[in-house]
Image (cartoon, rainbow, N blue to C red):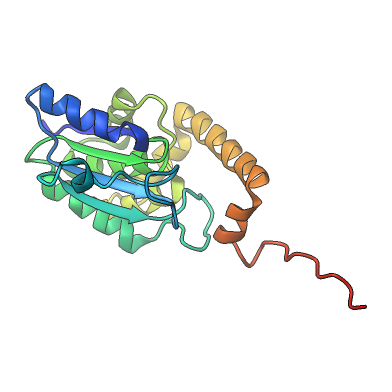
Length: 206
């Protein structure tokens, strides 16, 4: 059975090493990081070759964890690339999917992979599979909408996520956290939605 592992960015290297020690080496890592994230800082993905893991395939997607359409937010082209990457490697060994916190972007991508790999399963069973491996999942709804389309689920996966009580509660908390971050880090808001950001006041001319 295909094994998908979801984790935080700062847990990836430990998970890779643990899988190797267990005799089940990771086949691939799908990384999702923030636009402009400084290497080895919050929001960035570890570059596996730099840590001695040149034999593990890695794809890095770059988009914000936003559930509203924003500059450099989730886009169909990148989500399609990520889904195809997971499916390409899913039958050769465990695949790690991670974002910054392993809650929103990564879990939505995993849900999309399940939707394709287990096309016979109804949507609620796919959600059960996701929660079994990542109980704190709060899938990014824009990414869910895209993987639903790519998996040919006709909107059923999207609706199942919207209707699920656990995912709904955890998504609401995730959105509250995002809003708190925007208040605490207004420069992030300016980068994500420059058209909505309030420009700084210019001093009056003397």
